[in-house]
Length: 272
Ligand code: IPE
Ligand code: IPE
Ligand code: MG
Image (tube, rainbow, N blue to C red):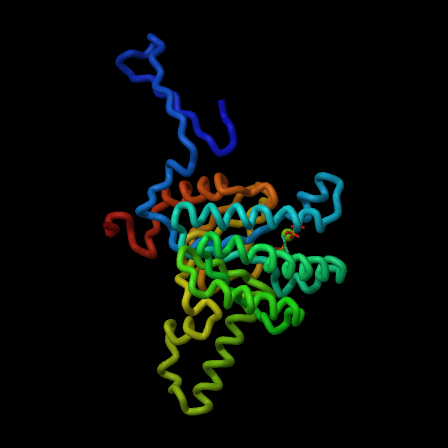
């Protein structure tokens, strides 16, 4: 029997094979996670809202609204097991090129979600953070975002970072421009530009690089997300559409991640 999110193992000891002695083990993905080896930072490309709505003959916006329920569930799922950083790709620079009605709908949804969910953030001791070209968002959105970030700034269980009007190429270009300006102003020398100095200019400067990146909806691409930060991130792709994605799916991804060997250029024998 196979059910999503639950694995059933039937083990027949060799010595008694044929006698029908079965060891039956029922275990959810959450129980399979090794909490001592949790990824500190999980980044997610939340994709598939439009297709989810279309599958049901509904307007794309219904998919985006349903996606908010997944955001809540995943946020709480992270807090429950102790993931310290969750970064969600909510709106890319390229998403500005969608039909204006959809862009407006997404901005309104963002504003109402921030306002409605600040309480959930507080209840779960989650700190809200935002990366991307925030200045390009509608003023109301900027104001509400700032107010929610202020209200949650002392929370400590998990940092939820929303990537809004974000693209990695924008971020990397912006960092290069800032460093060039610092050299021009005589604040640093060209030789002082190294990986640390560069990373310090990125919008993620206080966040560790993600160990695990999940993309839903069956697309196998990065779509301009965290290109610098994901140099050594483990990538996990699932066909599940974002509005169907729940904590148990997140835990399944973590279990998969924990089975991998992260070698960082070394060979197996050098590890441990
Ligand atoms: C992800 O779902 C949400 C955003 C990009 C804002 P999509 O809207 O991309 O859904 P699909 O990919 O069209 O199904
Ligand atoms: C990536 O999804 C951006 C977000 C999830 C916010 P898209 O649906 O916009 O990506 P592409 O265009 O299919 O690569
Ligand atoms: Mg998409």
